[in-house]
Image (cartoon, rainbow, N blue to C red):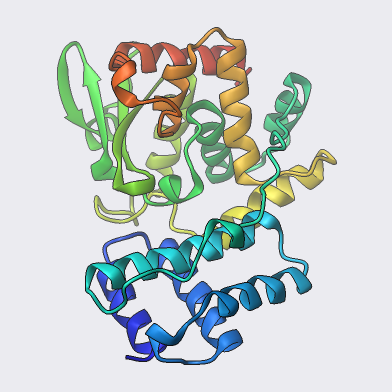
Length: 297
């Protein structure tokens, strides 16, 4: 079977993943075929994989990008092994580049204050505040629908439409259900000022967004451009992941435990999960409250 045919099978197999993930996999696999040729899948050799890596390096691709593309290729071959179309994967550890462990930069407290003062529309403000106070990934943010937001009030649960119509009460808590990497579902709580800003935004757009429509009906490219343009206003290099990293940094500085931050961000634990006690919603709520209190909204 040809590589191209196997790639089509594989992309059908992962069709339940996010559109962004499928797009990346498709680009990576098509790039591999373009470089090594549409061979019979069991004729792809270690030399072909080495050639793929060398071409990517000649194109000045980052080590992290090359590693991701090789991981895509390896996922394809693990799938083909399961189907018994091939016996082994041609990708080995020696093909994978070493990735720099450089710590991502985050915003200082002064930069956060200046940033928030220079946002001039409600959608941008809601996006930035959510990213800063929850640490959501871009894909998670862009997939939020009204049906994913539940409001807890005095031990009762309501849809977000109730507070859009009737208004918030002081102790209301919103739980946003998001699906992260590996299809791992979690609920991220917000309250106080961040929740007020979110509800203000939802009131503004409620007439054209239904419960199954993303509350931020924009593409990843538009989101990236929005954040970059806001950063330009304050002469800071800015992108969505920098806001996510800032949330983690502020949460840690606010006294949140590392395991709570990992749960909030949807990270897999670096140590066996069983070694950690389950992080409860009260601890997550404490972490997001600390974030909103330490970020002057």
